[in-house]
Structures are given as C-alpha cells and as structure tokens.
Amino acid sequence: MNTSANAANATREELEKATSLVGTARRLLAKGTMVDLSALEGKIRLVCTEIQAMDKSQGRPLMPAMESLIADLDRLAEAILERSKPLADRLGPDDTGLG
Image (tube, rainbow, N blue to C red):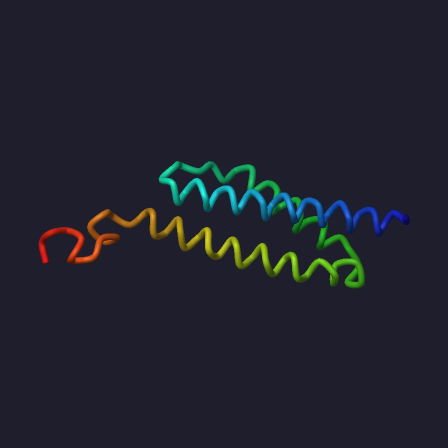
C-alpha cells in the first residue's frame, strides 16, 4: 500500500473515532451528564487538517463519512442547545401543572 493510501486509511480511522466521540457525547448528554468536548474538537481539527492536505482524489472517498459526521455534529449541537434551555422552556404547558 502506498503512502497516500495509508494516509487516507489513517484519516478514515480518525473520522470513525470522531464519529464515535460524537455518539458518546450525545448519549451522555441525553442522560443528563455534562460533556467535555475538547477531545472531540481536537479530533475534528486533526481530520480536517489531514483532509485539506490530501489530493481531491484521495479525499473524495471520505466525503460520505464527513457528511455523516457533520450531520451527527448538527444533532449534537441541537441536543446541547435543547439542554441549555431553562427547564420551563423544555417542559410544555401541560408538563408544568400550570396550564
């Protein structure tokens, strides 16, 4: 296997790790656990840097995995925003006993 194929495979592995970290963060957040996203940030920064350094022909096969990661990150962002809302905003009027 040549060096560029090795680099693409290593980047694919890093993408998979980042996706796993996002999934773990979403599960923890759903349980009410505080989540430290610093490891995720570093992992994504590494993946982006590696992909930017690739030729288009090397990076193109990674696009589906990147698109999936971006969608997962969007869902994580939505969950974080929902979690940051005050409790009264998260509960509907029927849940508060006031409506």
